[in-house]
Image (tube, rainbow, N blue to C red; front, side):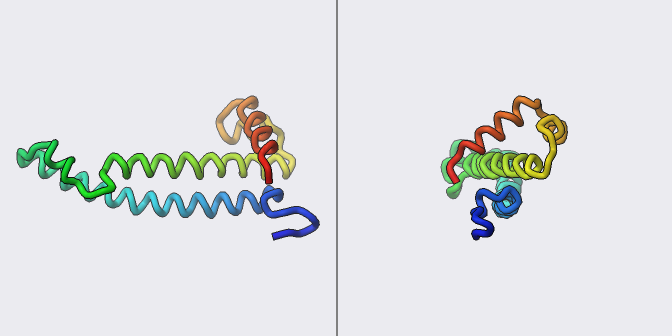
Length: 125
């Protein structure tokens, strides 16, 4: 998308909209993985309470294993969450909020927001 010579990635609002879409998709995938984790956790707990061997249970687990599902959930939110934070900070700054005000909203230091904005500004479009 291009308007007034500005690509969507250069437009802070468009970047935030894309980050929100990506975050929503990651959250939905996490919901599905979390439901599977819940199901498997209940089954594993029942098997352990029944006296089954943990080695046998874990080695016979269908891939992706529970530890992989947990890792995937954390990675998805880390990646999309970081882009969302950056996009939101850029959009807030573009609308005139000070770095201090953004830092207060995010619960971080002014230096952290300043570094985040500089990092994103240096990235190629």
